[in-house]
Length: 85
Image 1 (cartoon, rainbow, N blue to C red):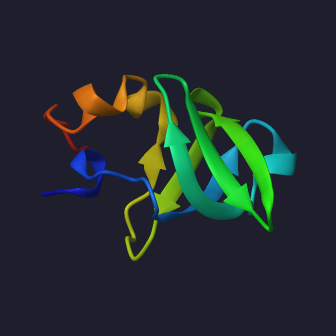
Image 2 (cartoon, rainbow, N blue to C red; image 1 turned 135 degrees about the vertical axis):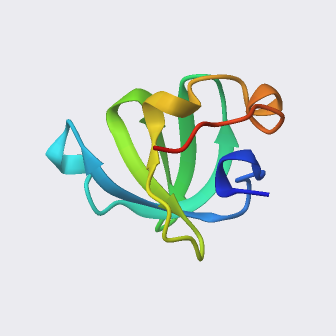
């Protein structure tokens, strides 16, 4: 099963690139995910990130996930088939 279809709750997220330069390098544990956002806990603070504006990696994965590709509810994302370029 690829990283796109895994449950991300409890895993560490690292923002690789973003339209907003202040988000690049942010990392923390995923505590919630909705259709358009991912919420992480970073140094004791809750940070909500818009999926459409970030590219990120999940714990122990070299795969860079484009947030625009995962803009659906998590329960739908885990069953979807993704076409890799």
